[in-house]
Image (cartoon, rainbow, N blue to C red; front, top):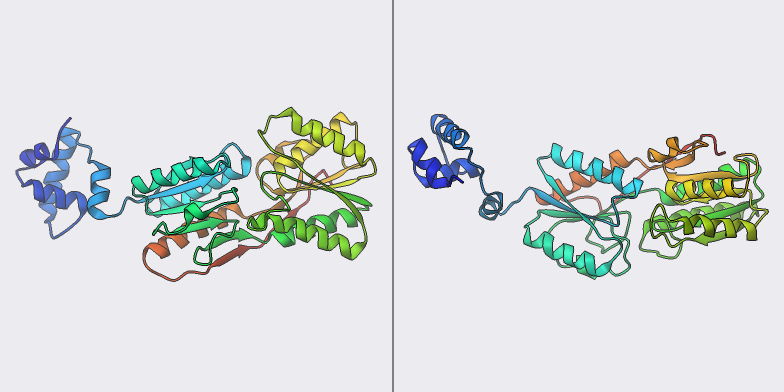
Length: 329
């Protein structure tokens, strides 16, 4: 494997000059740059990025911590974040925490050792002390961490109100609220919990009954989730409208309705949240509250760039949601 000394010898320059070319430091003539570049090409020399990052004190890497990339919302989020990071010259180091606090702490240690420039965190664990005092920019996705950590979110509260309002307008007389994973109603730091608050406030204004179920999501293909939903609807046979706090949960509700032979939308109307690609693939096609994932991801990367440049940024960056009506309502 060729070394920097080999490049210097072939280009007829000093090792210091090659280092300056690689790190773009100091004045180097274009002719010298071209000689070094040609020598690197002929030798197939690959610079040691870790060593360069230590020299520059900048790795051009962003750490991303999420619960699981297998969830359709997070997979779309990762895609968009990686795209916009690349547009700004950054690479993304992906960490799946599986909602395991010890695993998150290990990942943070790894990110620090790899000299990442910043972290985007979409953590769902309750204790987030390990994100404090890291001395590098952090952007929080849809959750409160600390007053000095900027948040990117959508209008979760309005999303809940839009969902229950539509179900009521469609004639539903008893609504079910289904949560699990993200969007649970009992974790105030997770801003997705505001979906439940909006849902409830709209119901209080109308006097409509409701029932709630919080699933313990262990895996997208876990049949126990559908079985739990079947039992829930058997206990509440008069429920005729569902607001599920993610499209994945809404898809599970569709499966449960099929098992119970409840027709959609005649006997049961269903609304999901996120409007990921899954919403248009399930049958019937799912009505959903759309989060602008692309715009939110672009905002998160722009915030990181501004923080790295020492600029001030907004602490709360909230995006409006949109009701997308399809076949389930």
